[in-house]
Length: 189
Image (cartoon, rainbow, N blue to C red; front, side, top):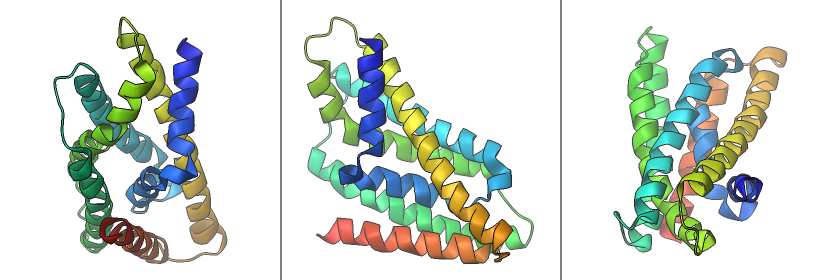
């Protein structure tokens, strides 16, 4: 059973039909370069903690928010993350970086994205007596999937910044704008 839920979490996160999550993780990582991999993994883990919490609360029927509202909020989180990256890039050029604020934002946005998973998760839970093991396995699968996405995105950053010797702004700003544009399309469609 554990491996089934682990696989479901992994498949759910890497499913290109649900590319909004992939887009969010890519946009979240756009501010960073491969040498900052520890910060990135902590950031993605903060996001996972947020969506794990809302998945659990939703599965226990303690939280129930309109799927329509959540489907509106998810692209907004991507747009805000892209905008935050661009604004934070300007501040970081002056030596100011508030990594703890980034973690808090990732955690908060994880709460929203977790609600996006909640109906799917409740459907796969079926008649399970306990949600603890399925929730743990599913979230480990999600975290593994996110690490795969981070590895792909950071490989792209490595090629651009370390091999092609492009300045970080040619990574952060275009990736953030891409996230904003695609999320805006998701919002208005």
